[in-house]
Length: 257
Image (cartoon, rainbow, N blue to C red; front, side, top):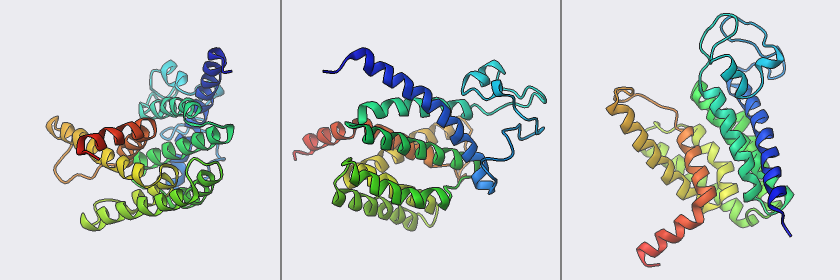
């Protein structure tokens, strides 16, 4: 028997853990592309190098309390930092409903952390470092198969299909699609399987096209300007993980399968 109060309590705890891990994802996003240690030195303002006090490191709340500015030099702190923390919290909470066992919940939470790290590094430096993507491919292939999120054949096929489809787009686009995006899809494919991976990439392209067009019309994006694509991949993966099977059923009904 499942008790609603316990269900929501666990989801709330996962949300809080997600906020904390989202803060760590921000550290990874800034330091890893620069090949800096993620442990030392302590968190500091990247402009005036003021070492942050503990109360300046509380996810989301510190940014709100400081009104989005460094306490010392008053330099604006990008809104993407609290947004990434908040989204990681939401995704950690969603892992509770995605996983049917404790092991699956943990794997989904770690997968969302990886996706948010990739979003952060892409927004910061427009790369997905190999030190993140390649170990993640192995980790999530094994985790997906061992916890039965996907069958072993489905996880392996998803890994191959995910990488191959983005690599093909990279080749057809003359290199405008980053190779890091293809490596990111190694882990995505292992977790979603081949069909849902394909759906997530279609959605990512759709989100990218719509938002990109909006930015062009608003004068915020110049013709030929490169933009980070991993945030759109993340949107596609999130929607697919939550609603992918339902979307596929609707599509099959529309085409008469």
